[in-house]
Image (cartoon, rainbow, N blue to C red; front, side, top):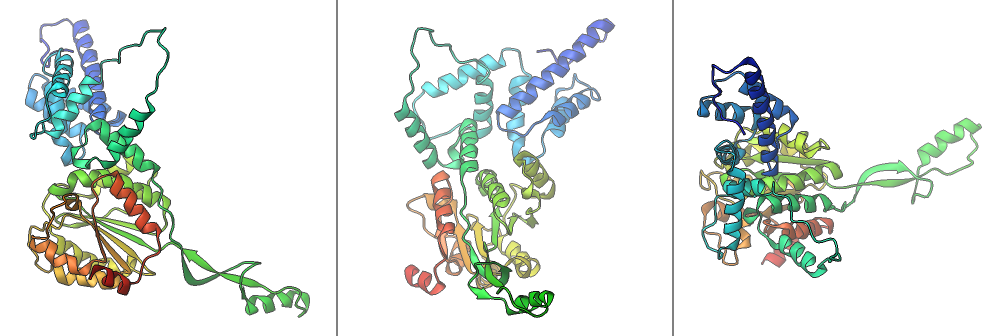
Length: 413
């Protein structure tokens, strides 16, 4: 690793070698960011190398700002980048020191105070550069199936907010395996079907005209079945940002598997990201989302966001038995101003309104805030969403036929 400030009296060959080493270090720095969970690809690496050639490399603050501008596209990734920059560009032995720190933290007793998520993820990313110790050749391979199963079960019950970088990557892989069965419903439209239960007299007579009026076959039809529209309203405020990052992977998988899926993000404003999440590549999809969502990890105005949705989008997407998933913790910056009225309109416009709240992971949860008390009377179901097990429960819930609202009200009573 080289220093940030090259000498001006150095020979031209040494200067070229210095520039080449700087480009290689930027490439290694990009790999560190990827191991820490940031979406840094070849385009960001080339942009960072070009930015480094246009600034005073001796100014550390200027270098950090240039690299962060070229390589980071989301506000919530800034803390991870700053920790990685401080560790990587400090001295050549930073990786070994980070690995030793991670090892010491693992040997300590479990404490209540947890290290910052950014520092923990960067330390794990730098410690992962050390290759695993090789086993002796004469030792037979041994697979502990019990440990593997227990580790997977632990991941299913682990809270998203408490996961490390490696556990988040494992959770994303598990989310990709989740499949949401289609709850098909009959529509008023018909399609031709030789074995259909209904007779199509109009098409039968039309076909007989080609045979001089003789009827040789009876045309039959069947009702078209389609999944109901799925509308998702997800909170991306500061208190929900960690959960929203994981849930976006689940919503991306659902948007690519189901038909008629509409996804909205809201913080201080409402953003429609349905078109961006239909891209097959999740990294490209999330990068497109970052360009259209300006208020990530900001405040929360639930009532204003629901009012905008009811005014601009409800008539377009809420129809034919639509199911609405409202993902938020109910903590509104404006209190309960206009929240009850907009929740009541949303509830009456859809067939099923399910509120997913990560605060329900606490056994002693009580609806004390004004926003939660204003929203609860207008939802059909109130469920937690904080780990993989809760996502599987949600999939099982959506795959079953929706009960009538009278039955849901009797069960809640």
